[in-house]
Length: 163
Image (cartoon, rainbow, N blue to C red; front, side, top):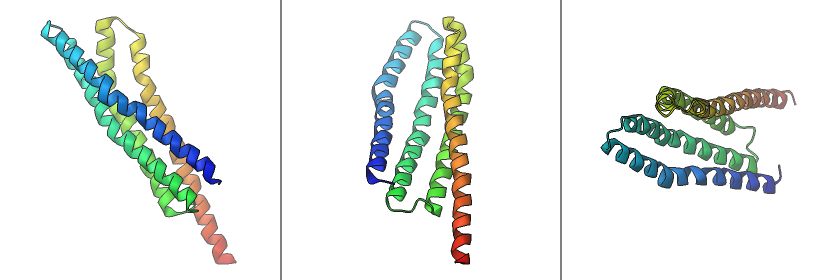
């Protein structure tokens, strides 16, 4: 693969991390402050908002770990190590991170449902399901690539033994 392609993909990985970092540093604390102010006025919604925010902050850890693994995978491709156990391990870690993120947002879904009931916003539940389904799609994609790569490595090793 050409180095320019992996460079573009590495840039895309970095650009995917920047909005999440901005969200964690600027937007989520603002939402937490507004929830605190609402709690002082007697609203019970603050605890639901805090639960959802906690899940969002916790899910940032596996998200950034998966981005790091993706960056490492692209580096392996640059070094012509695409068909190696390092790549297989990176794909497995990406799959596991996607499963963890999906599970975390699945835990947060009842809180989203409670918030949708209180605010009378039924579309909020569907919006809360988007990270779950996106993470599941990424996990399945990484699992398929993981299996294909393992099979390709096995065939390559077998072919090297024959020749």
